[in-house]
Image (tube, rainbow, N blue to C red; front, top):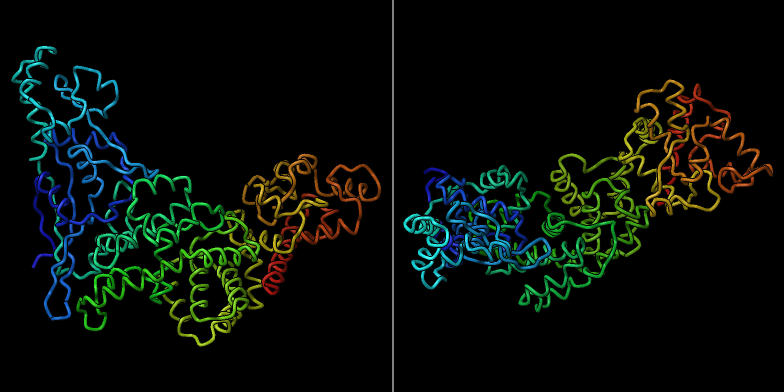
Length: 598
C-alpha cells in the first residue's frame, strides 16, 4: 500500500469537510499569521486558475477499543492551515484572530473592469467600480446579481456579458481545486512525524512540538482543546499580558471554565527572567510527567501507541491526555512557577540577559517539579535546583541535542533514590580540579560576550553583591538591571593605537568589566598605568576623578571584587597578554568560589 495519495479537492468540498469536522484543523484558535495581502494574492491566483500548492492531511491510526473493535481516526491537517483559514475568511466571510487575539474580518474587494483584487478599504466601499466584499457574492448575499451586473455595465462602460462572466468567475472559485496529499493511517507514526517536521510553513520550520500540539488540539474526547488553550493562553499572558481582555472577550466559553481561573494570575505577573513559549510549556510538562524527553514519544502516546506491542489502544490515549493535563496544571500553578523563579534568581541570575539557553531554565523547572512530586524538603529542592542550573550553564549541558539530553537526564533523575546525591556526583565528576584550573580558564579566551562563562562571572558578582569597577557604591546588579554598559579595562582605542588591530584581541572578555558610564568617559583612552596613577592620587586625598573611592584598601577590595590583578596599576599595552592570562585565572577562581557557596 502506498504511503500517500495525491489528488485534488474542490474548495467548496474542502471547506465543508472543515465545517463538519471530517478534517480537523489543529490550533484553530491560534492567531492567523498571514498578512491580508497574502489572502488577496491567494484569491487572485484561484481566480486566474493558477496552482496554489498542496494541503497535507493524515488519517489518525485506527485505535483498538475496549471491546476489540477499531475506531477510525479523523483526518488531521498537517500543512495548509493558513491557506484554509484564508479561504474561510475571504470566501465564507468568517472572522480570524489577529496577533492581539481580536476577531476581525479580512474582506477582499474585486474590480470587474480591471479584474484586480485588493484588501478592502472604506475607499473601495464608496467606489462604484469595486465589489466591496466578494464573500457577499459567493454566499448569495446580494439580492439580484443580474441587476448588479447590468448597473455596473452601464456605469463602467464594460459590456454586460463581460461583467457577468467575471462575476461568475468569482463564484467559480468555490469550484476551483486545490491539491491534497493524503498520508495513510498505516504509515509508521515516526515517519509521519518526520514528514511533519520537514515541512516548512511560510519559511518557519515546523517542529515535533507543533505536531504534538496539533494532536492535542483536535482531541475532543479528553479535553485536548482545553489543554491546548491553557498552554497557549498562559504563554501569551506572560509574553503579552495586555491581551487578556481580548482573549476573555472572544473566548467566553473557555474563560468561564475553572482551569482558566488558574492562569489569570499570569496576566498580572511581570518578570522578564523566564517567559516560556507554548513549546517550552509542552516540553517541561511532558518531560516531567512522562519521564521522557523526546516529544516524538508524546505524539506516539497521544495516538495510543503501546511501545511493546506496537498496537494503538484507546486506554493509552486516555491515560496520556490525563497525564499531560496534570503536568500542564503543575506547570501553570502560581505557587510552583513563582517559587521556581525565586530559586533561579537566588543564584544571581536576575534577568534573561544572564541566561543564554532557555532549555537550562526549562530543565531546571522539570527538576523542581520532579523533586516536589517526590516530596523533598523545600530547602533541599532549592539547593539542588540552584546547583543543577549553574552546573548546566558551566558545562553547556543543553547546547546540543537538548531532547536527547533531556531524555537521558530525566530518566536518570527519576530512577535515582537520592536525587540530591545524584546531582552532586554528576557535578563533581565534571567540575573537577582540571575543569576549574584549566578548562574554565581556557573558556575565557574568547571575545564573545554571549559566552556563558562571561555571564556566569557576572552572575557570581551579583550573587556576591560586588560593586562595579571603581565604584564606591554602585553594584554590578544595579548596572545589569539598568542595562548598564560593559567597558574595557584596557581601553579599546588605546589598544588599537598600540597595535592591536584584531577585535578578538582587544575585545577579550577578560578585558571586559561593568563600569559606570561617567567613569568610563573619564578614563577615555588612557593606559591603565596612567589612569591608575590618578586613582592612587585620588585615594591619597587628591581630586576625585574616577568615581568616589577614596581609600586604598577599598580600591584593592574593588579590584578583588572584579577579579582584577593588583599589578594592573602599573600595566601598559606591553603587559596586556600577561594581564589577560592573570585575569582569566582570577575569573575562574571567582566562579569556583561562587559555585561552592551556592
